[in-house]
Length: 495
Image (cartoon, rainbow, N blue to C red; front, side):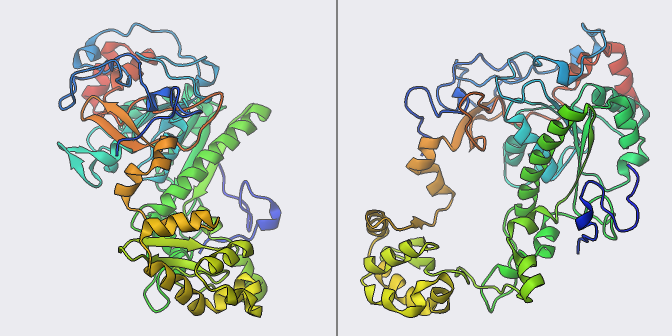
């Protein structure tokens, strides 16, 4: 793809051409949660065919199946399939030792070349709904998420989530053999997701001209901190920089305190959701045009969108949103309050009717008659008075009493949870939000389920993150590589 002419941004309409970028889960009745794979409830699928489970109880029929485990001996054996591979978009559904499931993306192949965290999570979201995701990692430098955060028995737990529903292969793209093999893989794929700094794929001879020549229907999703062009394009960057530059940190924290960064990958996660949406949009475009295209996603942009109308406010009014802590400049009550038994609860009253119900509940109906109470902004300007009323009432009651009273009054309240509460909450349990997955390395794991439920074509978690390179031989054999060719690639250092 060639750079746009002066002042224009490829893929965007001319009117924005001047854009610049400064307790165990309960299961639902009668077979689980509608729209999610039954594996989240009563899993009755066949046993995993992979390596023996080192720490789990004896194998049972409830084990979620995983992909066939490659063995060193398999690398030396001639491949059974030598025919030219069929492109993923033309396959009715790829089987590799087990069913790919009935998700709506079944038959779609995604090559995940990305690391930490937006690109890989986008690929995970596609895999959750049936896509055959092939995770490509360097032979000696695995995806850093394998070592990110806490581990059990030397196995990174974050990877178990991020790597779920992915087959894993190793490939050094900077070697001739690695480059050629990637192009062969691309010829069978629908989507490639990458997050190298701009110019890296091109340096390896794997830029858009080469990839699209190998597969004119390919979608190339390029996820970087700053996008593919502009003065910052070649800078290294992570989600933290996007959280800072988007304005998120500037409005987060107490008014007199410092800007506050989130303790998790917020910008990366928002970018991942956006990337998955962008890929599906590009695939829909391919259905009409018959050819693929490049998705250029800068992590600094999606988080700016979810921050709301701040640019519009500044453009039209010169307004800069300040830090307000837990309060809102647009309504009140909106804060966290501590109960008599030491629990924190969050209250929000964005609607006028809810605000009035809260005031009646806390025995301050007199405030409703105040002229300023009639608007959210007016209430926000008198947040001290409202917080005294609401906070004082909550401080005299236990958390359970507060929740029950608010529910009876049809007012909005929620306890402030940590992960321990999430794991035992009956609403999350009813939705199977945190589900159990059997893993051959660690045994039963509980992790977040897929993002939403589809009534007719549900997704599901088929397996948790796989060992580094576990499926290399299998995937390459599907391309038609013989055992001798795979051995030669290993000797070259390409695998």
